[in-house]
Length: 467
Ligand SMILES: Cc1cc2nc3c(=O)[nH]c(=O)nc-3n(C[C@H](O)[C@H](O)[C@H](O)COP(=O)(O)OP(=O)(O)OC[C@H]3O[C@@H](n4cnc5c(N)ncnc54)[C@H](O)[C@@H]3O)c2cc1C
Image 1 (tube, rainbow, N blue to C red):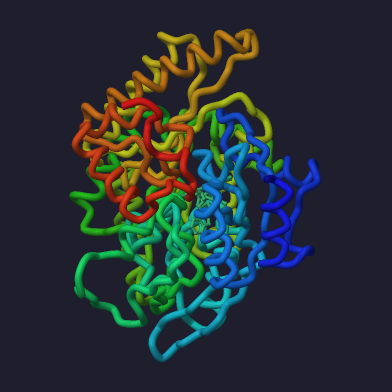
Image 2 (image 1 turned 180 degrees about the vertical axis):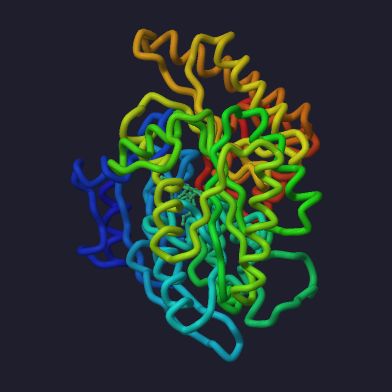
């Protein structure tokens, strides 16, 4: 059967676009998620167009083969990890920018384009693509759509969904459908674009994306603010948002340990590195004078609220240095603390101090270490539990699960979500019912069943094995 399927796949994409040797399969057996076991598929198939995707999905339906779409494999919930008896459908060769339509402020791309390329192209033409996950140099736009990726600019510009005008999708049964276009408004029936965005490769394979561009913000400044204690820092986030009259592009948190890890990863430093935590604010303005007024006013408020100092970066080099430092935290954790569990909970902004406080209690009660960083301005915190050196594997597994369960219950009680941007995938599926009722989960399952009757597309994701 396996050989027959591989022959049929070769006839669709050509011999050169299939990998079956173990080393290659092993590479596609995992993503960047730490706490999920890899799983080696029977083949990796590289597609070049929507018709090939369609033919593969028709074949998969005929023989009931699980298919896992894959972008760049940077996911943090195990979404691109295949089933052992399944195939990986790699979109990485569909990496062309198809059209830059400046008169309509839109760009049309294939899913395998790396996000950073879109940002650069927009900027070179005086425009701005506002999707900005910290992984923008390595993740694909198709993966961003499938996960509804967030990032450091969500506070002002929203997650990926806010920038998608249209999609071409190959349904699990092989039909090719198109929703949306280059227009800004569209209420023609159900919002199908939103249904596919964030569906984690379970409802369709995205093969073309129309993205919205906006005018490039003229001036911006980044404020780096060290705080002597975490409580003071996070308490000023809701106050800044509600009282300053300024909507920053970003408010990011880096606790002391996150700063240490990033510093080690980059072999670089930032001011006042030993303090409890730093907040980063980015603000934008139409002219230099308004920008200066805004950062002076914000800086004064932050000092009144307890910031130890306010460092202002208003040239490209200084701003990039701060953002590079912030964006390297996740890479540093992956590199230096491979036994970790990076979470992605989101709460209403007023609940941020309570959420952060609870993470220290959870860590202490379960004997693990914890660090906190992330997008505090939109309530999304990457609470990360770390295995202490002295703890053995079995103790770590148990402590990690207990810590996660407690974190999720607290988050749910604060009115929050289990995942703000990384998705449920395999990693979090068994905890879904802490947040959703049986009726809510069943409604989602009915949608999956209607679109994918044979359950072949990324079948082992999102839903708990037992509910
Ligand atoms: C260092 C680091 C920093 C990160 N920072 C952020 C961040 O700031 N914000 C954030 O949101 N995430 C972040 N991530 C997570 C990750 O980069 C995002 O989830 C990203 O969107 C995944 O894109 P990808 O191309 O790597 O997708 P993959 O990992 O390949 O796949 C992710 C999911 O999308 C599905 N998929 C991929 N392509 C398609 C397609 N064309 N059609 C249908 N389904 C598809 C897969 O099946 C899978 O379920 C970070 C990851 C790392 C390693």
